[in-house]
Image (cartoon, rainbow, N blue to C red; front, side, top):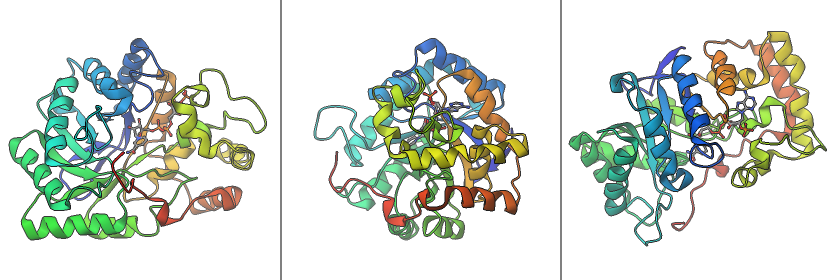
Amino acid sequence: MEFRHLGRSGLKVSEISYGNWLTHGSQVEEDAAKQCVQAALDEGITTFDTADVYAATKAEEVLGRALKGVRRESLEIFTKVYWPTGPGQNDRGLSRKHITESINGSLRRLQTDYVDLYQAHRFDYETPLEETLKTFDDLVRQGKVLYVGVSEWNADQIAQALKIADEMGFDRIVSNQPQYSMLWRVIEGEIVPLSEKEGIGQIVWSPIGQGVLTGKYLPGQQPPEGSRATDNSGSAMIARFMNDDVLTRVQELKPIAADLGLSMAQLAVAWVLQNPNVSSAIVGASRPEQVRDNVKAAGVKLDADVLKRIDDVLGPVVERDPAKTQSPSTRP
Ligand SMILES: NC(=O)c1ccc[n+]([C@@H]2O[C@H](COP(=O)([O-])OP(=O)(O)OC[C@H]3O[C@@H](n4cnc5c(N)ncnc54)[C@H](OP(=O)(O)O)[C@@H]3O)[C@@H](O)[C@H]2O)c1
């Protein structure tokens, strides 16, 4: 495994991390979840990403049990707050009340005294930014959170938060968690340049396009049984990539991966890691062998001509519009 700094902070993270969205407490049984976490640890992954909302809080519980007994100092545990965790008006968003209640629930479920990184899962248009940032800062002072970050905030929102933090002396955001893959490059236009300047690292999600970039979904055919595209919660999430144009072009990436002696998943993960502003690629996995496959992308270098071949194949199906970085206009 290789390690990178989380933005300009002193914290090092494994350049491939493991996330448990849609899998733990949902698509996969607890045994398989534990085997995936064990495979990640065996392969040198030290960074684990979850969220209060995943599987209606069950994902944090599964991860807490799977990591029990592992030396805490050897792990970086990331979680998030924003999406609803209960039926109430205040069980969502980035108010002082919800953040305070949510971190306490996350720490209990994860069976830890602190999380290494606490992330605002989306921007909350219904809470003053000062209130959110002050609350995050308080959690850092209390030792419940070591670093703060955001997820899917646009460049203006990140810039605004940095300005307030600097003016008020609050802890600064060190990371952003955006979707980023060969197919989804919307951060490259505005967020990456700002982040490079401000010392923010990207912890990118769905680097394998939720499995699409493995090439296992064939155009015009039913998805393989047991894959995310056949899962109750997962199928809606992956739907944006499940069209014949995308799937046909992805098949054409196979010779590129083969020429490099890489699996398709490794090529996809290696591709996001070529961007020096990426601190870590969070891979998901429903089976331990997937973790063992994906992790071999660590340290792989791709030449400019390989990157060009990939661009030529994917062509117009690549999404680059910065306006696609969005948070709900009202709380969900
Ligand atoms: N901040 C946010 O808003 C946000 C949103 C989404 C995700 N995330 C984070 O990012 C993490 C990763 O997201 P993701 O799960 O969508 O990432 P991903 O790595 O692009 O996709 C993972 C899925 O692809 C399939 N897969 C992975 N490796 C494979 C391999 N080698 N061969 C065949 N299939 C393979 C598996 O699904 P099947 O086996 O079921 O097909 C696996 O669950 C999440 O767990 C979460 O921590 C954050």
